[in-house]
Image 1 (cartoon, rainbow, N blue to C red):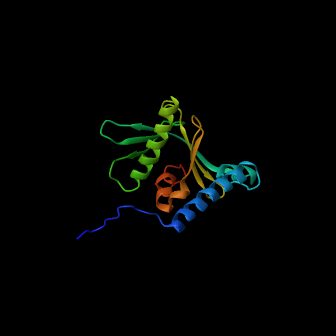
Image 2 (cartoon, helix red, strand yellow):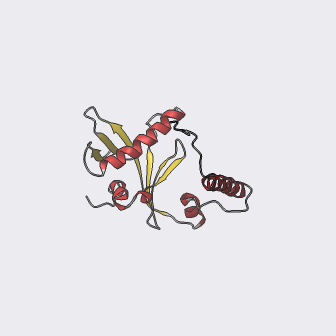
Image 3 (cartoon, helix red, strand yellow):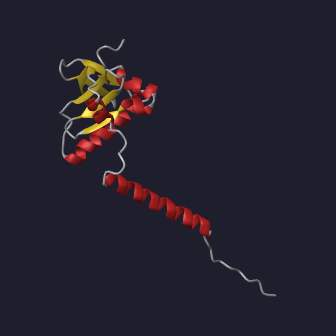
Length: 160
């Protein structure tokens, strides 16, 4: 008795066609944006500039690692300690994660941690963190209200 085994694995033709259509659509949309036929998604900073949205509060901050693993947040204009971010405290993980990403960007560009970061509350209610040393900006409202709050408490006008 002979059993025939077929180990050939075939991908259904409709799956291959769907994948090809997806790839071609992505390439076509990218090309249309590049040549100006389609507008790219609004960049929040550009949209604020175009709408003449002014900042309501700006705070220049530095973030320094402490020997015990905490991160000290300091107002660079006054030298005041704004917060001490201890590991494991709710909300601190988000701030520490964002700042690790910003520090990594600075390291890749050969920029140290000396230049301050700019935390800005805008008149339209948005909150951003900008690193002028690298040109990177993060819209903090994009991560939900709890994570936004983790940064907004660092503003001078925040209730303590």
